[in-house]
Length: 341
Image (cartoon, rainbow, N blue to C red; front, side, top):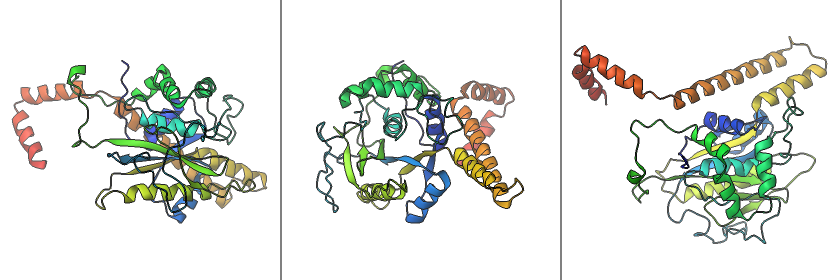
């Protein structure tokens, strides 16, 4: 089956998805606030932020091409043409329906610095993100492609599509292709886009529905400090500008950061403290060990939740209905259930 399903905007789902691509030392985390303290806390907790994924309700005129007026900082909302786009910036047009979530993640992964390492064993205990052989090969193969062919390459990848569709909801009833319909203006249609920093000191919005990447502003790139706060502040302005275009009652937004695996950062901190001469009984090390245990428990919870998402509960539900009908309690149970709704 060549169709792509819609997937839930959830850090556990997205983390499992990138790991199925072969990515190591990375994870997704949800952001509830983007004020200065929240962004600094994000950097302090995870050590490295590779990019942001923003989910919003798509509406006509919400894209970059239909709002090409200049912003206050002098940058334009107009998508860049091929001659204006940095050669090493990976941008792919979305040519496959429902692929925007995976494409937003790939936009970050394939643009992250030092991500060309596909030697998982060599960096197993390192801090840097490992892209893995599959995505490294995809990036190398499509380097010279125009954006539409890059999108075609993503859509044609059986490995990527299979991993994406592994999170498809188990439908109670199968639908014929003829019964599928195109969304109308009355339907809520959601879309994922990515924000990434570039080595040229520019933050780009990568939206596969646009003709090219969009420059949303510049940031002060400190080679010595390697702090992510400046570029995150620039991306924050673009996200806030998008949100302000909606009615005040609109709350259907979601923001996630693709970061270093928090367990990697915690282990690195423990290692540095231990090398400084402190023993395992030190209060700071004990605190870090508790954080590590919490993260391992979080991973197990994500695994359990993803197994439930993939499980087909229909046979159980049918058997339960049969059992209730046989015992003569189906009508009473249905009535009680309706009363609670």
